[in-house]
Length: 125
Image 1 (cartoon, one colour):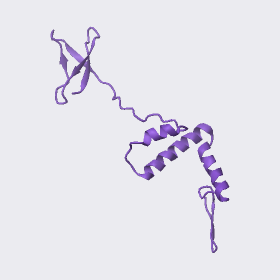
Image 2 (cartoon, rainbow, N blue to C red):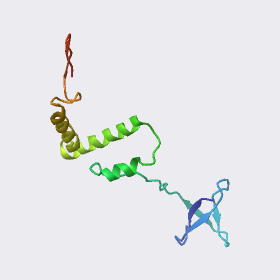
Image 3 (cartoon, rainbow, N blue to C red):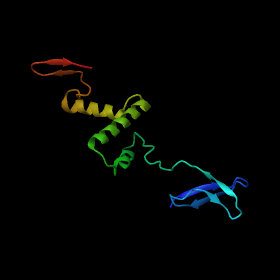
Image 4 (cartoon, one colour):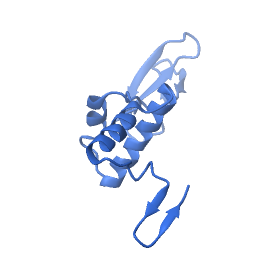
């Protein structure tokens, strides 16, 4: 049963009262004084702050979530954008791109603005 908060309009005293969902959500004390219900915002504040630089925060935020690989990639992109806005550029992305270039000898496809095959060359933005 949910807890509802009521305040005595004369004394300012506050009480928490257990009531069923289908009750009228009003409270009158033994002296006949009707108390005023206080409305509060819910306390559901999970995953509100994830440090974009912390690998462990990312793992905690995504460990038991249902979703697709695309959802994880979208969340990773959001964190990358946060790192870029905080630091001017995303250091993890820059490290990945430089390591990719060292490993393969060419730019990553996300950095290249040209597609070449033996028959065609296409430049794009």
